[in-house]
Image (cartoon, rainbow, N blue to C red; front, side):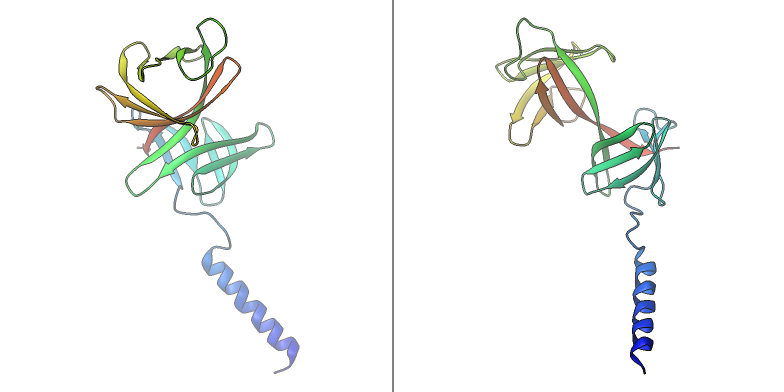
Length: 183
């Protein structure tokens, strides 16, 4: 066989292998229609195998890594959200911002924090206790290296790890929302 024939045959075999493997398509792991566990009939996230997505009514293209989804749109720009998914659970970490309500500037997570848009709140004490929204108490630990807080509720909820950073008088939080297949 001539060299050009070998090159053409090799190229065809590579193309066949790429088409079988999906050629980089990110399918299966996240695709589907997803809803919050507390409202399983309302899809808030749709991820298609072709790289198209709808998140909270806005259309995007998306890519993902093992722990982040990046949504891209010419109109709305890029949005990157942390997630966790295994065979049993899917958590989407959504951002929200809390304003420091005490005097002065915060030196740590300790203090009273309020989100004006959702009317949610946190109170973190210096003895490791917290209260969420005024009536969900528990204990917390901070992992400075990971930029996370583990909330151990006394009742009502499973232990929850959220990610955070403080900028000025604003507490930026990535809160994990449990997702289920939309019905």
